[in-house]
Length: 271
Ligand SMILES: [Mn+2]
Image (cartoon, protein in one colour):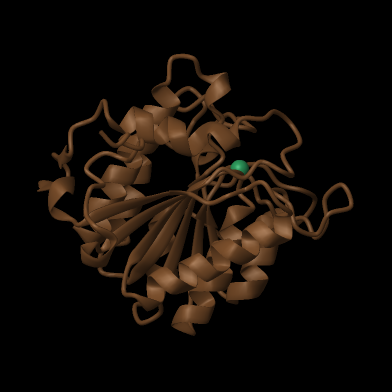
């Protein structure tokens, strides 16, 4: 017998035939409040097994997408090496015509994603769903950190929009790229690929308490689904889903919510 690795629900398509490719990046390096993101990829895969592959929202089934799960990137090395390999992987996947779905890990993984995507696609716009602005230039002496990731990723991409933010530093609030969900179709360009970064703390902590930095006053599950729906008609090139901290939700509802959001996103964007 050969042992069966833990895979995301319905992710049994061989790589060469796949359209959507899941890659876990259990990165937990610059976390400052409370830990757990290293356990997130496995927790999301495990939680996905409790869900149906059919979506009542898009009326499509995950088994028909061509979903492949590559497992996890090796994170037993320097942050720079991890982000470098992630960048190469995202570039390789996009170059092969795949849609990468990256499971963090802390939010810093978005930086590797957008570097690879920008390289592969030339033009890129970044849409971040996050309770936090993550817009410091430096945090605890680090320029690359979960607390600076939107600034660094925005510098890479050039076009950045953040939805759901309710935790700011100083005068950031007046920055024009903090937008309301309804503004998404107006500000995104139809002819430029979109990278979508979903920090689970964009959801209200009553719905998803198992995150590294819970922030009250968040979006509902259905508001996030409406945001996904508003991206249909745009060219969503890939996405990441970050900051789940499984130890802080023993009910596992947070991991199930993460898995369910992934199913709906994959089917709405690429089903
Ligand atoms: Mn956040």
